[in-house]
Image (cartoon, rainbow, N blue to C red; front, side, top):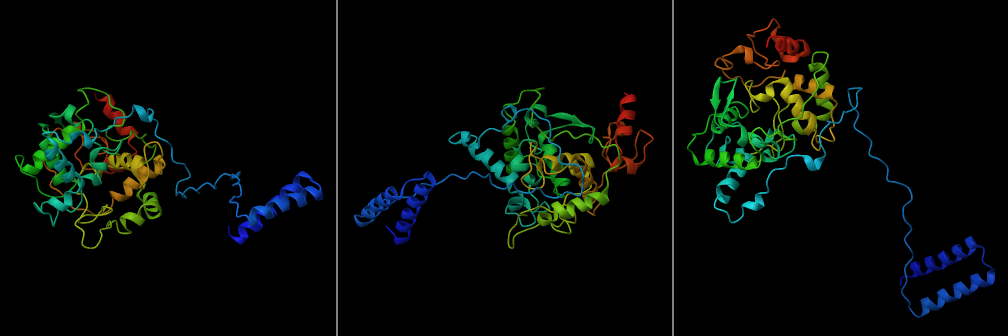
Length: 362
């Protein structure tokens, strides 16, 4: 036993004796016992007293908004959709194709980016930059409903679309690139994986946790100026002060993707709609946020979306989009429209009057 430990033990006995009011004779007796234990190297340790004070709470991040982040009202976690486990594929005939598809979704840039090992057809972002955890995260723009809903009619193209068409839309819009051949090994693998993720969802089934969270419309227009303050405080540390993202030196992939600029999504992507972007960040950003523990208030999410989508980005020819203009979403940022509202209001809001007018026209 170390000398300081022995002395500490003797002091401990003396303090105990004093506290309980023992006589000096008893105190001396206790000290004597301690000395005997020291001489004969009897091992002992001091009792560990439990902490009675709770650990200090982590201070919340300051927010430009006066409104606290409002939790998303959802079902209990055990009632949420969960993706199947990749481990269940081990040893199955489809294992190789589906796991390759997952790899392409998670690390698109390595295979199909500017320095891709297979093709060079996209901007360097990964599919999972928008479809989090390779399309498996709850309210992370996941693939839960793809297998059960496709093929389906989509107003943007005015046609019934296949999963392959939808994947190529992402390549041409979110990845600002070129389409894959539908019969290519890579397309087949990605479609196999996406369909596998939602394989347990039945047609017309209401799935909790699919897609994106719902977000109440504001009574005002979303504010790019307010959104800039949110971005500078809560986003720039990962995505950069110029929205350029962060890429490790020598890496084909972004650690944090660009939110605007030449390497980001173009103006035809789904995230260029303010409502889609706001719903996406509400349950997923900043890093660590979830649907049940958001880090942005509703107003911050809307304003941040307005700011990011005001910044410069690549442009796509959208002349063939929305052949039936009456089917355009209320926040589609480009005219013409079938209602009397101007383009600026369709982009930033307020959206409630547009939604009410759209409902009355049905």
